[in-house]
Amino acid sequence: MQISCKGKTAVTLAILVALGGMFLFFKRNPERPANPPPGALQKPKPASTQHFSRRSMRAGKENAAASESIDGSANPLALPREKIEEYLKRHHRDAASLLAAYQASFGSEHEQGDINYLKEAATNYPNDPHVQWAVLAHDAFPENRRQWLDAFKASSPSNSLANYLSAADLFKNNRPEAALQELMEASGKTQFADFTMESYSGGADISRFGGASPLIANTAAKSAMAGDLTPELANTKGIAYGVLDMQKQFCRSRS
Image 1 (cartoon, rainbow, N blue to C red):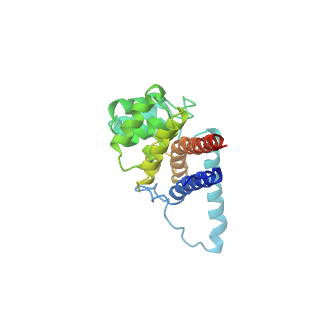
Image 2: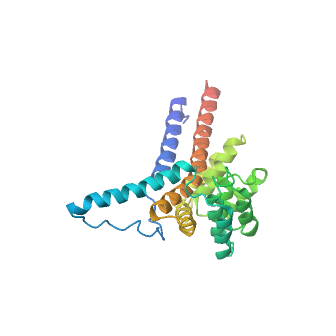
Image 3: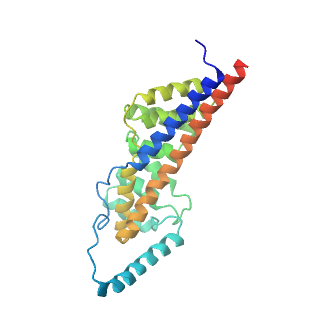
């Protein structure tokens, strides 16, 4: 039985809705960070009327300090290079600390971040899935992107994100049939790991090391998460456009 162009359109829309629902589900149902910043989960104690004004003034000052930090830098996580290097030395420049250092370098001496931290992580820990994801999210090695995609798929065979990233890349390089195959493989996997909690924990940790208050550390941690999620959303858009283009080509071929 042949499927009409309208039928193909319905299938395409179903795929797009499924993709959108998948990303909304994972973004609205994150796991609680393993190591949240101190005080982030503490419930405020009831305050008497006579102490309310004093607490309001203290909270106002803290919020003002947070606003000043956020407005004064595009990235509240930003730290000077000396502090970043001190943090790396303490953690023996392991994979997690190098990724946190990369996020902390945005908006300090490097507006777009010091890519050398990410490349150092890639050189020393090429088989670490979180490092592979960061390399792909920030396109650290565009000339070798396919090799990094294949490595990510090999190290994370149960992670559908690897297939979605591969599909987006294949659509971009005019290989729609191979892209659809990646989407089919992704649909059969239940895991979707984009390491947001690891980014959160790393951002909070290096921010606290830099002397940030719990409020600023929490903001910095969210900034670290957003730094990785923004490219992820761009890849989702690429998949959606790729599927729509295939649908249009099919309709033209049937007319």
